[in-house]
Image: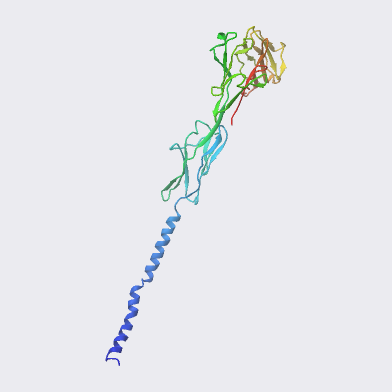
Length: 318
């Protein structure tokens, strides 16, 4: 049996329960505010700059083109710039920014040494991001002629005394050097060859080999002007000098004169006189050839120096 007033007490407690439940639930407006805050946090995280493509270190050839690439996931409102060895990079005809990338029309082994960094910036938020460092492993080859190393001058060469020649080539990676005589490769078994110093030593000198004293240089002339090539050799006995135009032996004739000192003179130059000229010094046992060229209105690079029936050098890079 319920006590008097007991049922009313229980009914009163029942009426209080919804109030208790309502106090435990957050108001609807509070839930919406929390959701808005979460969305704002997500939107801020999504605005962070992230690289999808960073510049990478790579091999490059000196004088050849190359590209360093840089991209971000959301390029909207992003501006790009580049640093070279920590300093802002200025555009030039050889090296310039193309969109977000850095383009090289001709890589230079000296000017492009060091690290490159891509900088992405959002000017609206002030956010700034630097890429990883990138650099070039620049491969290059620099050729040169063969010179007398020991003794110091041709005049000091004595018969039956040793003579050392040096091949002037350099590069990265370090190039290999090979020596040839009469078109045949010389080996270390039969000759004294120093690959590190790039030298070839003869145990006994032969002064009959013609050796260049004055080498001809390229000429750039106008029509009807003169072209003069100087060429001299030394040997014992003195060598004879011959001139060739496009492999055709020259003789003295109208407008073409060869002097006893090896000089070649061409007067009133015509278009047919352009091309490659070869000066050959002939000794008693071999000959030495030098090449040069002439042309109208444009510069012509000197062609390679070779040794006919004597010595020549060849170089390559791994």
